[in-house]
Amino acid sequence: MSDMIKMIVLDVDGTLTNGQITFANVNGVLSEIKSFNVKDGMSISEWIKSGGMVSIISGRDCAITKHRAEEMNIQEVHLGVKDKLKCLKDICKRHKILSDNVACMGDDINDINMYAFCRYSFAPADASEINKMRASFVTHAKGGEGAVREMIDILSNIKD
Image 1 (cartoon, rainbow, N blue to C red):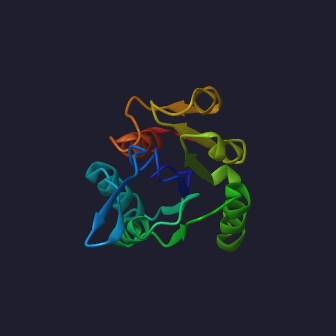
Image 2 (image 1 turned 120 degrees about the vertical axis):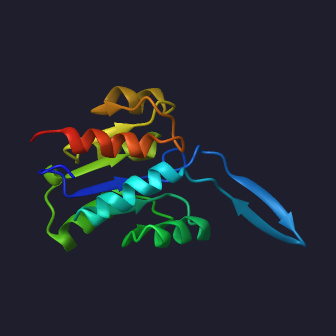
């Protein structure tokens, strides 16, 4: 964990996943299917074990995301969020974390407002062009393919 960064904030679709949302009709019940990268999950778990905090802020409300967050012991999970920056500021206020102690990752325009607030911002390799231009770092990995792992590796090597 970085000495300066206390919390990482993650979007879900296009960051923790490859951005594809698959629907399946199982016995008349419509189900949503997502895939998460185990390397991202391992690095998130290690970040938390080392004393770091992880927050998920997603525009979509999805039971699968909630389940995956529980598996990784992520305490701050906010789904169906319209204003991600307001949500992030509320989390920081509750936990008494300064914006200088926060890094975020998102892949599309609804994540950009968090970029300027955080000390470091990250965009996956396949993020929108505007996100890649505005991010502090662009990962080599695509969303859902180890981008979060790469983010955490970078943060772990920054000497603040």
